[in-house]
Structures are given as structure tokens and as C-alpha cells.
Image (cartoon, rainbow, N blue to C red; front, side, top):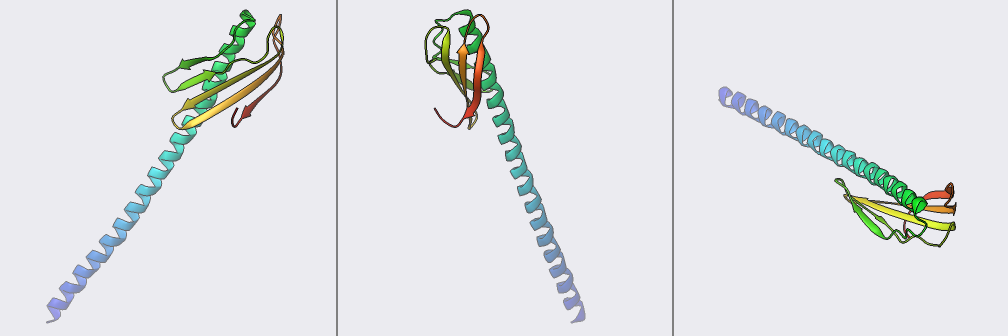
Length: 132
């Protein structure tokens, strides 16, 4: 009868240790998945920001070369898209440029207030905005 008890104790110990190791493995795997999702979110946010800045620079160059440039165009890139909204104002002074980009589930919007366009563009403010 002693041999049966020792076998039961050994089997119960193996089962308990297996459950502990399984719990640890699940916890570690879940943490790794969570960190990966966070890394992807940061990457998408940064990509959306850089895409907004690039589209804004494109729109500023277009406006500087042609005062009649009205914006209102979309640009598709490998990672996402950006929208140059209609540029407010006319002529050489007091123009407002708004750009919005989306990468994955992240959207980044920038607004530029331009005092003069030509001969040298003078931007009085540029800021990230939540919505237009």
C-alpha cells in the first residue's frame, strides 16, 4: 500500500508543477503579445505624424510655387494616406493649411497659419490638432 501512495504523490506533484509552468508560460506569452501591440501602436503613431509632416511640406511647396493652389487632395503612401484639406484664404497673406494623415488606426492632424506666402513663406503657427 505504501507504493501506491508514493506513486500518487509523484503524479500529483508532476501535475501541480505542470500547472504552475503552464500558468507562467501563459502569463509570459500574454505580456509579450501586449508589448507587441504597444510597439505597433507607437510605430503607427510615429508613421502618421511623419506622413502628416511630409504632406504638409508638399502642400507648402505647392502653395509657394502657385498662389492658386487650393489643396483638397489625398495622397496614398505605402504605410497610409494623408488628406490635404482645402486651404483657407486667398492671395499672398493669411492662409490656413490643414493636413490629416491616417496610418492603421492612428490619425494625426496639423494646422499651419501662414502670414505670407511669397517671396518667402512665413508661418506664424503650426500645431497638432485633435479635429478640424
